[in-house]
Image: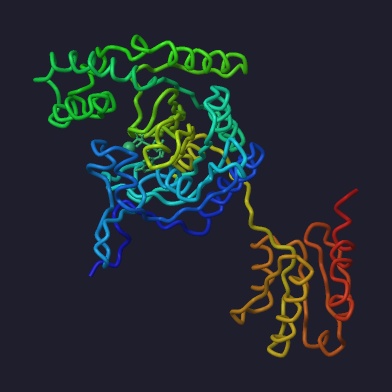
Length: 432
Ligand code: ATP
Ligand code: MG
């Protein structure tokens, strides 16, 4: 029997989940400002959707898929990333139709699954927040996407980040570059890792993405794709760079960056964390253009651009940068009940307070009065209401403000009818 969570997965417990909510809420608000709307697609997809989009020879598809045959013998897989499912959905739901806004902008958040070697910042079930924008080739949209991601990290309080960009050009660019790269790699074939020897002929660009130490010196000497750009590809990339300059956004160019998914073309980018203690996993966001993908999945020729960021890595970055996540937990009122006889009324009182839109709590553990006050204090209650058996029989309740220490007795009738007034009266002391 194994009653432990599967390797490479995490339980996200209270205390930690508030941080997740903070990240997700920040994204929701910010992406909303950029006119992105949320999309939710299934956790699993037909294998073909992913294999076709991400690419058969990528590590994701060839090694990391959580795929299986279901009881109807359909080949399905847990989704390893968000873009392919969304493109599938975009085509299937004809979201390119004239009734939809262009560019069509969506964001998503949720778990992704890859059979990887778990380590710090690398899990088998991890979580991404991502965006996709369909329908425009305008390089300004590439840049808007990048600066939105940068904005997002800034809003979270993350400081030490770096934007790295590259281009993979158009089809012709890659065809020309592919030849040059194969020529170069063949001359170093003997020294390459086994994986890269295989990649060399299947998909030579993948060699540039190799994490194998053996391949590193060879990759360092590889020809640059920037020397093979067609006029169209060059113009697009130049415009992206100029636009970034125009907005005053700092960036680096890494001509060896290829990203781990085959669907990209033109602009690609990564955002790296420079916070110390991140380990080997410093990429917190990756994205780019995928102009052929909608067509690849059976739709019209519609361009797309997007990014995905890893929530676990963002959390690591927040930790490393010492960012304190604002606590979402608050308690307006704690109701202390003294004596068995108050049990039922105390529940009615907390329910009434909640009915007025405030947060409220009470004791359920038969704690002594003193311990109940302690709980109220520990939970940071603004007001503590105390109901003893005497008060109950007189229809009264004692209310104390923990901020001002003001104390007053109200009738239960008042509380049930106008708790908001009691709340306001008891807490006005704070404003001086
Ligand atoms: P890496 O090069 O680190 O493997 P990747 O290129 O495979 O990343 P993408 O597929 O572009 O990553 O995913 C975007 C982001 O999702 C990454 O930048 C990272 O923050 C996060 N991510 C990817 N794989 C994992 C994983 N196994 N565990 C945790 N986060 C991940
Ligand atoms: Mg990867």
